[in-house]
Amino acid sequence: MNQKKILILGALGQIGSPLTQKLRQIYGNELVIASDIKHDKNNRLTDGPFELIDATNYQQILNSIKRHNVDTVYLMAAMLSATSEKHPEKAWNLNLSSLLNILNLAKAGYVKTIFWPSSIAVFGPTTPKENVPQQTLMEPTSVYGISKAAGEDWCAYYHNNFGVDVRSLRYPGIISWQSLPGGGTTDYAVDIFHKAVKGQPFSCFLEARTKLPMMYIDDALEATIKIMNCAPKKLTVRTSYNLSAISFTPEEIFNSIRSYYPLFSIEYHPDFRQSIADSWPNSINDFQARKDWGWEPKFNLQELTKAMIEHLKL
Ligand code: AKB
Image (tube, rainbow, N blue to C red; front, side):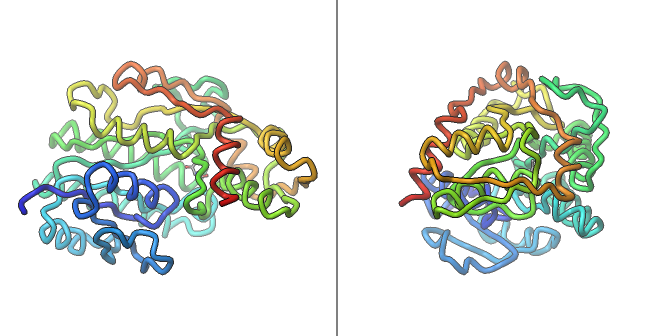
């Protein structure tokens, strides 16, 4: 009865939804509380408890933590890069006040361990383009990147000053079939699969040769669970770990999909998201994550393409 539970904030999001399912497989449905600011209209997470929680509302989170005896929180609620450019203050407020809520709850002793996702968006035009090291120049130019870079510093601050056990990964673009992304610059690499399996042409909002770091959802979930299960003393990075799997361009993913759908076609119509993508690196060096907690990705572009098409065709 007294078992400690996990709370996921933003459980209906692109990563929150498969993460909830994965954690429920591992720890049992009843021990993983899903929550989001909106109702689970499509009944995606009905196999366990679900609550309406606004991640910017400290009291709502605290009530849920007390009600369910929660000791671990995954804060997956965020506004992504493209939407953040349209609503800068809203993005700052959601991305930072939700994080400060959780950090303060941990500082006050209500939460033991926190997972908070950062992003490759913390990097900017002055960061090296290739093989970005863990520690490097970080001068993000997007609103989202600024919020994530500040969030990383808050994580390290709460860890260093108050002993808060907060763990974080700099996710690249995540490719998933379970739920659609919303408002990101890497979203094209998910949308392209939906168009291909429906037999429709694809209009890409990035240029053909824009190379970005990407990762299949299974690898992202594996990394998240691995870092959360790691002994705290092994974690040498308390801002956020670089995390890498593959890098590809729209042209390369299109060609990979075309080996399944030879008639699939693409047109390139770059929009405001092109300059966000241009400010991000092409590839990431994740040596520290490999060294500290044994990170190793499994999916390359061919395997990711096969997995996405198999799942979406069902
Ligand atoms: C986005 O495109 O905004 C996100 C990210 C790279 O963090 N997918």
